[in-house]
Length: 145
Image 1: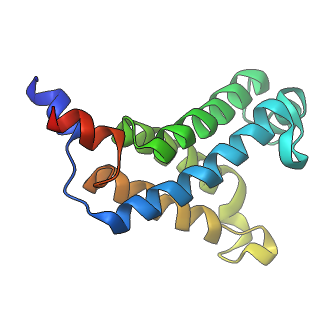
Image 2 (image 1 turned 45 degrees about the vertical axis):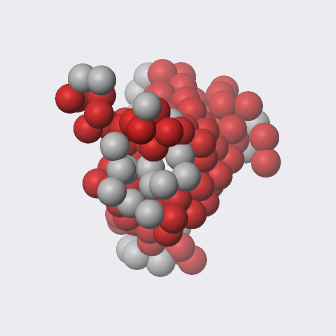
Image 3 (image 1 turned 30 degrees about the vertical axis):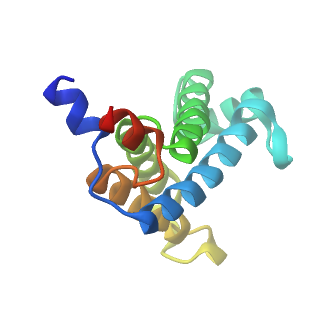
């Protein structure tokens, strides 16, 4: 296996990060499905695109597709632990855009639509990026073979 692939798939993490990765993945997959498919009370792609245009993220359809697609597919990747580091990298960028374009002006706390929840998810995503997917992951199985 090439060195780059081995670095992407390897993990130093144990079972604790596996739990964190799965829960963060569930949250992202659910948020992405709101944006893409209108599930769980979401607005779907058209509604999300319209909202993104209204806050200055244009073109709205492309931005909604990128954000929703990254959240949904990277969330699924985190749940199964497949290509967890690249998935976490994509989520990190998505969260930074969300924090600085939507939440930063509202302060820290969620009660004011602040960035505390996004910051917690950012911490989880960065932890996966640094440590890898953990012992119970598709990445760990592939790296061992």
